[in-house]
Length: 110
Length: 205
Image (cartoon, rainbow over all chains, first blue to last red):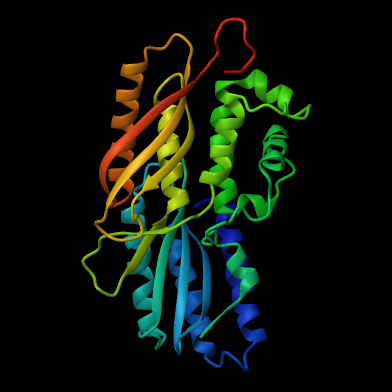
């Protein structure tokens, strides 16, 4: 991931956290927002996962990640790697029972 | 109950009709300007990136058409270029969510139909003279293991032998889908429905 993409991802994660804090009464689980940030940080160090979205469905927290795959990489392997990177972070943040969904939305051409 | 931040969600490129509010003409203009000034909304939109990748390949194949098109309104009659463009516009949308077959029961991993169509469309860059018009997956592609047929319409450069080009394209598509997904492909149907670059024509059928 280049510097521009990393900075863009960091800003996006900040946006998500800011939005979450803005509706704190509805979303009291601030640690979850922190977990999202930490997940993003983990992704920054490894995979070209781009965006994080958090919310709630059927009383369970839900994390949705949209992943862009770099040219030459396998979408399946990248998707699995992102999921493996996120899971321990969520466990550490006490949000192990969250629904985590990782979706490849774009594959770059070499 | 479902409550999510729509503004953040709109950027994800996960919605079935997502091209993030841009038209293909706007994206073609953006490409013709060399992607300057940089539009962050376009650059972070998966749908726009898929469409731009296809437009770039089209531009490489028929640069003279592209140069004329950005300066003038398209002709009202549908040429093969319009067919290719309409395919790009449709294919760039996210569409259905195609699951990966993973052993871990807790993992919910997938690829969008739009991203996989982008993979299929990218095959044209490996086969000289081929441009993919429309591409679709027939079958329950959002159900793991369900049989799926890939259906493509292509335009072939005038003078290229049809059969070898189609066979190479079919092999390339199969290889690409296998690399990036677990879709159970039971067939790849390719229809050559247009020729381009014929002597004496400027880009029409």
